[in-house]
Length: 380
Image (cartoon, rainbow, N blue to C red; front, side):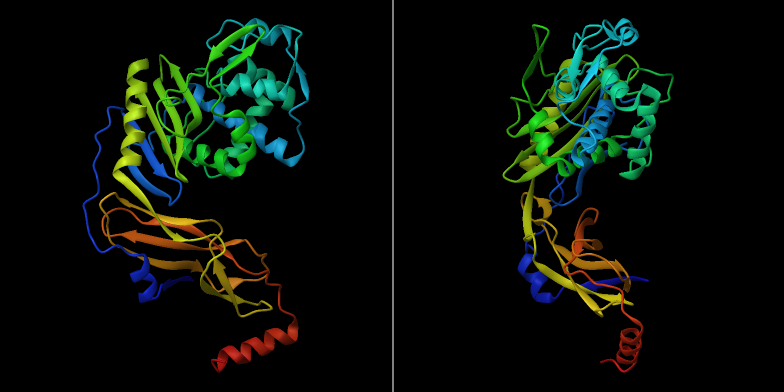
């Protein structure tokens, strides 16, 4: 059963804003554009964000995500070395963006990641894929398994670098934004180490990062450009200012300069026309949830991180409620995501934030189940 609990009037009064203003509007030049505020989950712009498109080199974000995940799990080291196979070099040494790898060269995982993220090297992607999984097709299976696991419901990958493959690789802007957000949140240390670099040198050749917002938007540090004749010019980008991170995707633009202009304009609009208003600090108790078959009959719901609502810069009213599918069945650990805080602005779509269990609740033993059942029957 889906349960909802409206927060108290005092809480709503404390966090609600008294002045209403219409949402800011934005007319994007990009055929596809998507902008979301990661501090609240608010979608600030959605222009055809669920259309399936070829991602070009933006597909490399998934190659990096898979590698980051293996490093975090201890199954891959940044110091591991992979050898550039002659067949891989012959195919990719002059095919689109390149790291300028050489046949027979041993390259560390860390350097390959720089080659993918900063230089957009098609060759680096394939060498990393073959080194991790043995073959690129086997690595692509890992990419697709990961996409399904993190909720990229409308995307599928056919290769490791986004090279045109007769329509096998297709994604959506919404899914790319989700991938970008997970890259930032799941691997903060690796993200900081590898993304946002202005340039990288390999084999005596220095290349600049193609990221169109680095140096143009304060706090810009990611993620990935893409371009083919089929896909046009696209970009999945993010920047953080004053603790507020925006994630954007544009696709299908006609020119290189048009991608720069639209990316900068869209992010500036997001930061200048909207604001993030704090709601709860990490660890704050926001409410509680009923528990079924547990050692406790209820569990406090806490903010797993700082939670905020995104509003027009000039203000806006909103309501808040806790929603969960309950009673929540035990057992579960402290920190498990068992509920959501749903914030509904007067204008715009609901913003949904996670709430975590504040305590570990074990499964109740036989006699405790009986006692809890009797207590529930009499409202004790």
